[in-house]
Length: 234
Image 1: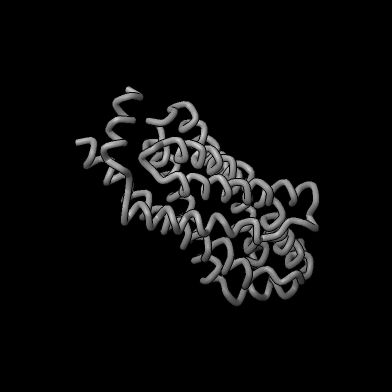
Image 2: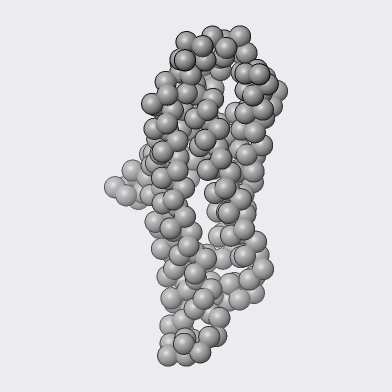
């Protein structure tokens, strides 16, 4: 029964990691890169021209957010035999990161409201409405990085637990820690030294997610060691 359950958990981790990666790439990278131009009038024109793409991008983000909530639980289940309290702490950090980012994403989704032509917006000249829409998108872009500290910390803890687990490879745990440190460094540099805040710091997370998804589909956990770890934790 335990073996069947852990196999199911591993496959679920792979599936939701892939969904999270695809949703994150489309909803957080591709679509915003089309909308955010640095010029209020051009940004507003892009929002009007690509409203369907904008909404599709937000839907992709919702898929990512849903997947991240499920992943926080799945990874807690897989890592709790190593240390239940730390596994729970990593889940909390993962959920907090998702909630913080959700607030900034709501600012993003609210931006087109200023371009809707509703009667209550007639008090704003068109140029001012365009600026407000661009401002909300800029707030999203500027504040979204704050959540990365919590997201990165969750992966640092998961990496430590994976490294100690014995039923998962140590190199995978080291990769998780490296990816988490990259996300945490992105927030720290974004707040304290924006000139040194590079998206290259996020690259290890992509490698980590891809490697973990492949491992969970192809290899999964060492069942004998999982059984022993589960029995010892009980």
